[in-house]
Length: 99
Picture 1: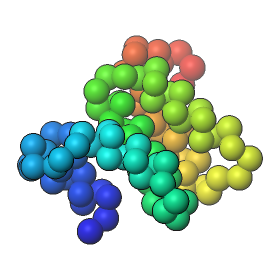
Picture 2 (picture 1 turned 180 degrees about the horizontal axis):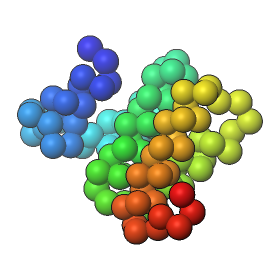
Picture 3 (picture 1 turned 90 degrees about the horizontal axis):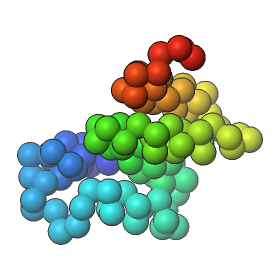
Picture 4 (picture 1 turned 180 degrees about the vertical axis):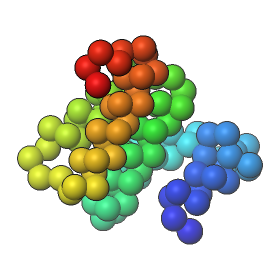
């Protein structure tokens, strides 16, 4: 099961959210701070960034996106993902002037 599938079931708002022993955000943070492969840790960070947008925490989501985008080497997929998260968050706060 991937983290994306797990999110559907036990993530915030998931069908079985209350069955998970800790909050979805804490679970994602635990993965981010683990020694798991980078691919898994980056996926957890991406899901947590989306969680911030879902909660309306747009400035935090923009900061998280900027954190990844400031890295010297990221994949094209990550670059595109975080650019779109910044757009969604900017629209969420009503700032469409810079788009």
